[in-house]
Length: 274
Image 1 (cartoon, helix red, strand yellow):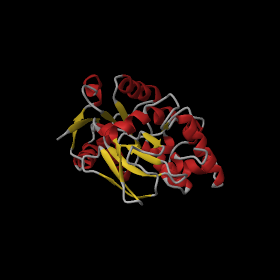
Image 2 (cartoon, rainbow, N blue to C red):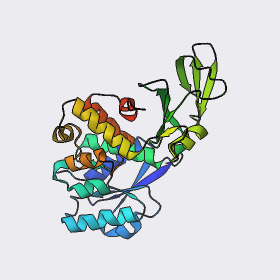
Image 3 (cartoon, rainbow, N blue to C red):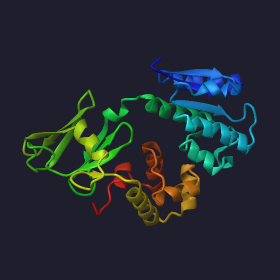
Image 4 (cartoon, rainbow, N blue to C red):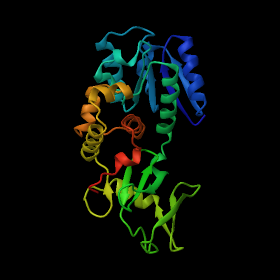
């Protein structure tokens, strides 16, 4: 096993469900009693709290999840009564990772496996031509994204990009040009751009800009925040926070929102004003 996750539960059925889901991603599920909270977060990436195993009132649940978050661990709430019964602050504490069905467990298990990969920020996940202009859009494994103005490197003659291939190491993208030339986008260039804050050169994606873009696309699609919340399963106040730029969603959450609006994730990431 490459990593492990703690599950706080006393229910064997829930333990089996999480063991199976996490095992598919080579992640070990360590089951402990809810009373052993003090040791649950030790060295873990995430801790799943079975809310219905030992019923919590809202204060107790916030205390448990808050302690985990403050300890540097991602808390996940397993709530079988449904997402709509979960307080917004709990959704915030868990970064939206609330499970209420078997399909949710499978989805969140995949998300945990991704976050457990401590080198995901060193891997190119997706590279493409911007849908607005000829910039190159790159997304890292941890969800950081950036636009790269051309020329990409000294070999880029400005002709149309005909194909993009990410090499097996996921540290370099090779761009084939219409002229027959080849240029490269490296992981070092993408990381520098994604973390840049000086506004020069490559363009970093920021929460305020992304939120404004989402609001614009939602309105163009004729959707209210309430309808978007219904389609995505994300509480309306959380969508409002994203649109206001007060919270930057994960790449997974962004994909859910984009799909509900009816556009691609790349279309959300790139504004027409870029």
